[in-house]
Image (cartoon, rainbow, N blue to C red):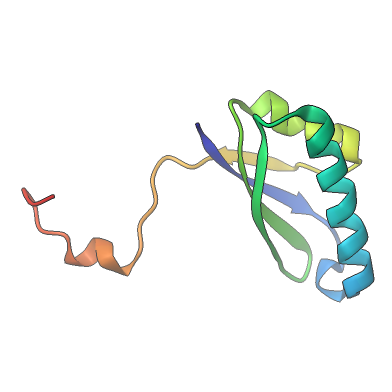
Length: 96
């Protein structure tokens, strides 16, 4: 199933209190329950003015539906094509 990064522009996101973040999370989880098991929230990263969320979903349309129903911005949705990390530098061509 495809994995996506959702960029949500939210001024002063980094100043949200733990209670506000909990309320946002609860809203998101409630919408996810209603949408069914095909869409999953993996995790999110809160920066000063944005929240970057990782989701697993069959398509971008379902992610947009989640954003609309939850009242969340979804300014940019990008499908993750592959993942790399420091171990990628160690991989030698022709070896598994």
